[in-house]
Amino acid sequence: MGLDQPRLNDAGEDVWIDVIQKMDEVYSDLIQSQTELEDKNDALEEADEFIRSVLGAMTDVLIVCDAHGRIQQVNPALVSMTGQSEDVLLGTPFADLFAEEDKDKAGGFLDLLVVGKDVAPCDVGLRVKEGPAAVVALNCRPRHDHRGRLAGMVMVGRPIGELQRAYRELDAAHEQLSQAQQRLLVSEKMAALGRLVAGVAHELNNPISFVFGNMYALKRYGSAIKKYLTASDNHVSRQEMEALRKDLKIDKVLRDIGPLVDGTLEGAERVRDIVEDLRRFSSNQQEAPETFNVVRLMHTAVDWVIKAQRIKPGITFNAPDCLEMTSRKGHVHQIVVNLVQNAADVLSGREDGTIDLSCSSENGTIVIRVADNGTGIAQAEMDKLFEPFFTTKPIGSGTGLGLYVSYNMALKLGGDLQAANRPEGGAEFTLRIPDHVPQTV
Image 1 (cartoon, helix red, strand yellow):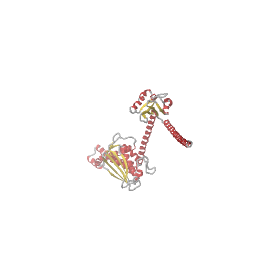
Image 2 (image 1 turned 90 degrees about the vertical axis):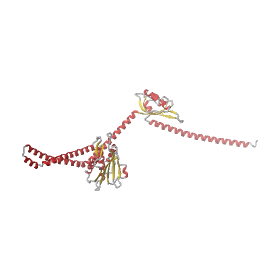
Image 3 (image 1 turned 180 degrees about the horizontal axis):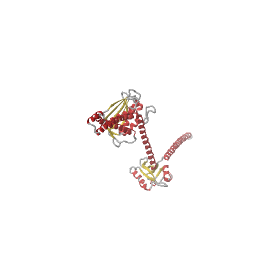
Image 4 (image 1 turned 180 degrees about the vertical axis):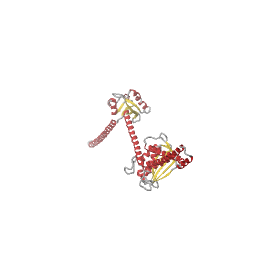
């Protein structure tokens, strides 16, 4: 027995060492668990602070309820609106928040969610300490637990007053934008009209000169006829009347007077048409669709532009004599003027400049093409052509609105405007418009 005693002591020491090691491991695990617990607690505090900051920043009211309709969470916006503190609100039935006339409606929200139905957005009144109920646009959604069971609901409401203010601001901004766009249209019209004054003046001068010439001739003829009739009234002899008739060239007067009157009327009508085109071009009023010869309109637009150019480019036309369409004549006229003006500006100063125009009808669509033999359009500029104020012209030589206005006018007429480079060089703009624009456009 005495010889075995040291072995027992050695075994006891080993047991104690094992116990101490186990205690060290347990203690180490406890420290690690405590550290992890503290980290998770810090994360929870950060998450809670984050959620509170988000709830505090919300301008919409927030109400979170459990499955029995008791309030579990609200945000400062609701506290501010109702005038009741969060401590007072928590645990109370959510239906008590609503005005008497909306209490039954709100009380049925949970019943709908329980049977799996959606709660439609609605306007309801929230009770406040003083004054009438505060109306909010309310949305209600179900809230589920980790097992997918209904745990309650979340309601978010936006004050109607804020919505109305936002709508008013949006309407005001839209109105300002519309007015700005209209001013841009008028500005471009006036700028284009200023560029075309010389050409229009020359265009007016021809029929006016024609009318003046015819009127002077008619005045002379009128004097001759008056003299002849006066002689007839004085009972002049037949021989003297024959001599007077020959001397006054009465027969020639009678032959010429009809064509002179017709020519004068034609010249006056031409002046009237030019003035009417000017009125349409510069007017800010919406015009009604009318039927007109688009080929004649193109010739008029070209005359306006080209006669104002110092170095006139060559013009080629590929179109029938008459091609009628029903549209807003002033709009179509301005688009063609802008396209021809754009081509003329590109060719400015060139002796060999040429503008090619064509017009055709394709499956109920009028297709107008205006092409030039200039330098073409750089690829980097192709996507910017129809943007407002974009121009490649020197400062002071263009507004950058001509193509923008033309593009938007084409869209309003139910068509479109496209640009491309020609294989042989130069640019080509293609305008497509329905040959019959309805009155509502």
